[in-house]
Amino acid sequence: NYSTDVGTKLVFENDLCRCWDFYLDPSEGGGADTVHHHCLDYVFINVAPSRLLGVHPETLSLKPDELLFDSVSDDNQVTWNSIPKEAATDSSFAHGGKNGYDDSPMREYLIELK
Picture 1 (cartoon, helix red, strand yellow):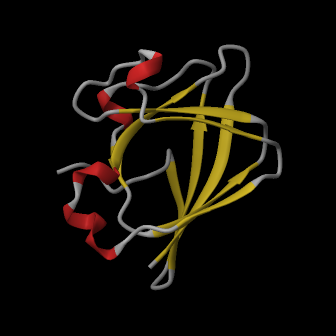
Picture 2: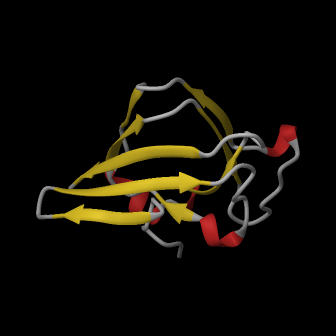
């Protein structure tokens, strides 16, 4: 079982959504403390250019051929992610995250729909 806290700080929640501030300093992340499990549809709203590296929750490997994803996003980019209902019991929707840039912080807002 992994945490369903999918951002750095929960800034708002009601019966319809959860809104997260997701912030990582340059090169921050990649450890067990960043592992989380997506169970709800969500949207990323980038407020700065970013590169997010997805690491497997068991190995936490940062080897390029073992990353789950290497996602580069532009400032003001909005990305929708559909999560199937069975995700809550499927650990393949869990991962850790690391800021892929060593010279700039990463900030996104993440909104989950309940």
